[in-house]
Amino acid sequence: METKIRAAIVGSTGYGGVELIRLLEAHPKVEIAAVLSSSSAGEPLAAGYPHLTEIRTDVLEAIDPASLARKADVVFLATPAGVAAKLAPEMLEAGLDVIDISGDFRLKSPQIYEAWYKKPAADPAWLERAVYGLAEVFGEDVRDARLISNPGCYPTASLLGLVPAVQAGFIDPATIIIDAKSGVSGAGRGASLGTHYAEINENFKAYKVNQHQHIPEIEQALTRVAGHEVTVTFTTHLVPMTRGIMATMYATVAGGRTQRDFIDLYRSYYENRRFVRVRPEGALPATKEVYGSNYCDIGFAVDERTGRVTIVSVIDNLVKGAAGQAIQNLNLRMGWDEGLGLNFVPVYP
Ligand SMILES: NC(=O)C1=CN([C@@H]2O[C@H](COP(=O)(O)OP(=O)(O)OC[C@H]3O[C@@H](n4cnc5c(N)ncnc54)[C@H](OP(=O)(O)O)[C@@H]3O)[C@@H](O)[C@H]2O)C=CC1
Ligand SMILES: CC(=O)N[C@@H](CCC(=O)OP(=O)(O)O)C(=O)O
Image (cartoon, rainbow, N blue to C red; front, side):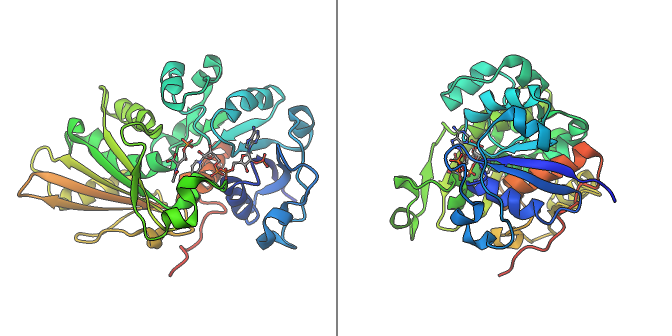
């Protein structure tokens, strides 16, 4: 019988962690070896998540890298910013491979991390070694990487929608505006004034304008693809829904490209990449069409009158924006089919 990879999850009491458990539970080549908690060791996982009753009987364990390395091969860190910066090096030195879904290893410059996250950056030597796992764009880098930094939810939607056009010179990168909206699960399970029901229901608000920590992440990737420095205007909004991100992006079209040209370019760029679906002419995707799935759906509208293109990109923030892409990265890292354990139809309606 084929042995399975043994995975552990830190932050398993949070939304990203519990989504990893949902997806890994169905993965044919991975077993969940340990679920860890900094606050609730000794408690059954299902006590906090009754939907896992009789599916997962795990008891939460304290975080101890040395003992974890004896029972797991890879650890997913689904922890708030600042935690993985300290924990990942300890896990790596204990012999575990690490996939971090927080922002701690995404930015190559410690100064830029500290300016946007307002926390001490990780050890520059590990920042250097970390591989940015935007699977459809930089997936080749992930193969055999020991430290994979999973992209942020907004950057995943935004970059998958922008990279082919920037790389091919179809848009002027200096004109990019990203208008993004997220469901409330993007803010995690912890209660806060800004995300409780009465604040969110029947409400729609912009937040962190020009200050969002995903701005340097998006700019870093676009700069790499463009070969020169790119800056973007990026505004995030909270919408009264549980899951889903929509990034609506605007830019000036170069060289008179038409909607058909954009569709052909993106279909060719994402050929054989099953998780990016490019919509036909005249069709724009909605968040419900990717709900609960690892898809990123992209559509275009070119306005010949203004010379601008509108690109709409949607994902489920907890799947393609976090746990699903993290597992896709594990699949790529292991040389497996990238869709293992992820080939399911979106939940609809
Ligand atoms: N929600 C989303 O859509 C996305 C989230 N992310 C990122 O993933 C990470 C997790 O997010 P999310 O699951 O939403 O957040 P949650 O707040 O829902 O969960 C975070 C978990 O981290 C654990 N934790 C908190 N402090 C510590 C600590 N000092 N040491 C170890 N563990 C700690 C907590 O579990 P316990 O108390 O049991 O240890 C908590 O349940 C964040 O960095 C987030 O930015 C990335 C993409 C999308
Ligand atoms: C709705 C909502 O609040 N979303 C979060 C996304 C957090 C996240 O995924 O950010 P890092 O992984 O980079 O920390 C936010 O806008 O900050």
